[in-house]
Length: 335
Image (cartoon, rainbow, N blue to C red; front, top):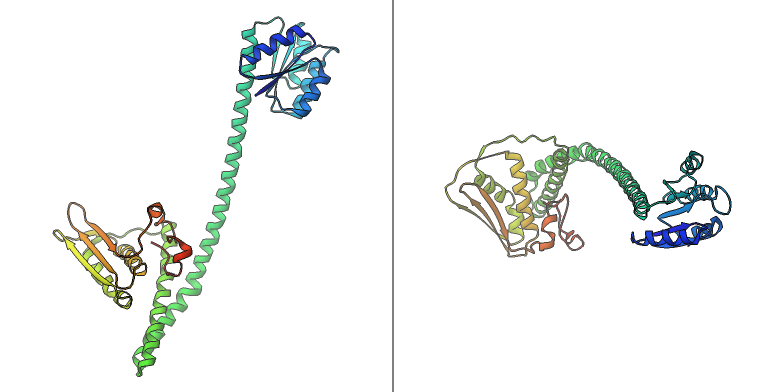
């Protein structure tokens, strides 16, 4: 930080400069208001120490006013050998931060200047804090706007997609048994599978929205988790067999029911299983382990591409897929 000392007395200028240098400040000196003005136009100062009366009476007060109009952040300390209310009040009124009566002790000068610098630092910090608070408030408002758009979009999905997809799926399922030729059955299976996949995505989006708004209250009941996993493996059999995968369910320990919400647990297990299927290599393997002990643990292992260590913390973010530019050819909304 740099200080400016303005006084028409060379001896006083030297004393003040040395005192301020002892505070760790770089110091520049000027003899009058004109010289000080030139320096102020070309440089920024943290503090200015100026005499009240120099070539002209009240010159220092006018300088204080000029400094504050140009650089409100700069602290101004005025000095005078003729202390009175008539000099102190105008100086403080026109922007001076403090007032010194000559003669003064060097330690007192340093204390006054240090106090001005401390106040200047606090004002700056408060200003930065207010700026950060305004930025945070603006970001929060923008986030709320995004949330409103998202809610409107999901409501539209519920109205515009959910019902038509359900109707199309029921129509396809009713049509299936009436198809006699092999080609027609094959086309029907593709249609049925595609509609079922679309229905699952719509339901997942709606469930995600309800979970995000904390509208879902888990309904816990005793259930057989291993049986639930067996049902899911069978449900997705066509998908993993089509990819040439082997799926194995292994239970270790004494089997016992767990307390959980069946619908939510089914969704979680389904996401993990589908993730293992979609990101696996043809001919790969998936092992699902139910580990019964003091706690019941469920482990999904597969021979797929895996998750890089740097991405582990991100895999549970909404709609996240590892290396999206490489993997977005794989469907789904992420774990």
